[in-house]
Length: 337
Length: 257
Image (cartoon, each protein chain N blue to C red):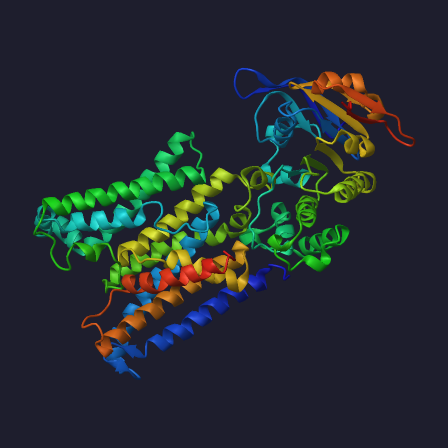
């Protein structure tokens, strides 16, 4: 049993960053044309997906960790409160022809619209869906947030979003430009503009900092409401703050990459194996695990493309689903969740 | 000035009052047992005194109105053990005990040297030192209950509000727990208010007994005055008999058929 003091905090974060840096550097050697030391030009090309994957993975890892603690549910993941379906729906709306006209709109409006793009739509779609879930859940209980209500409302909002999405597809049979309908439902590490990456990183960082700030209280959050309060923590304020932080990070991630399965669900469990269940240790470990896992998954998808096994580059979201699902079952079988 | 001064408390979940005009004081070092049938208001009273349920009437802890206490400060004064404490199964004993220090943690949940010292001394007191790295789901019911009591003690409270702390415990562990609680009251001047269904166990260790019936105090006083067959017969609605015993209050039990 080690005391959680400042050097432990800094040490844990430094170690997490160091391990991520090593893995990320290793993945820079992997390109879709082979595994070798890249030229300067190739390095710039490969650096981007590694950074995007790290950002998305870290945000999902941290958010998943907080969602599982606050919702007191080991099966909670960052998309549970509507982020993924809201993002996909909004991104699809952006692709509709009636909005396409706005892109060519004269003056600054068109420029802003073109610059912000699908990612901005996805971000506000994700955030909007979560806000609806939180508002409905809180309205039922006079401003308080209860885990069971949140889960229930989240599932319903996700289902409704999915139905609207399918409805739009049915109406606009031949529409969506590029990629087809499914491409919005399965996330991948896409290249985004420099500005988009910076904005997403900033938003995710704000969310993550809120969570780190709350990590002491989050470690109490796994107890019953009366116990949480008797330990001096305002349980409803904690839920609002932690869910807001986690949701901001999730929305930023899902806007950049689309929904990537299992990362937010599995990383907290992997981290738990390594550092135990205390949120103060778990949060930095799960954040690093998310970044590392997604960087690796992205490298694997590049490797597959190089070998041309599938004739195309696999979306990372498919890969994490394929590998993450069985891996999670393996963890479950062990009964130590 | 008493530690707790509660006057004319009134609370209801619906139409019928759950706590009805109840007045109670608690002094440092006093071990008070709360008995009464199911639904008599024991748990409700504990949650009211903890500040979790808002009721009519006056509640003062150390002379200060309960709503005027900041949550964190109140958490350093009162520790609470619910009927079924929640825990994560993969939590270690050490991690569970440390949560009791949460009201003292700094930013980012940083712990001071004092936090660690308190946790270690609590572990020693409850004979948990050798179990600090064990997971809670590997412990026996009795060991687990000791951990939860330990989490309360790590708060270094002046008051313990315990809701049936002897559930899940066998006879020996029940006895040991109550003996330890009395020792804490004596040696550290911690006031204890413990709800229980075991009237004889409660009577054997408590300084004072409070009998609740339908949200009212039916009797209050030292065990020897309260443990009377006629009184408990009324409260529990069951024919009772009292069996005298040397060196302590009588045993009270349902009449044999």
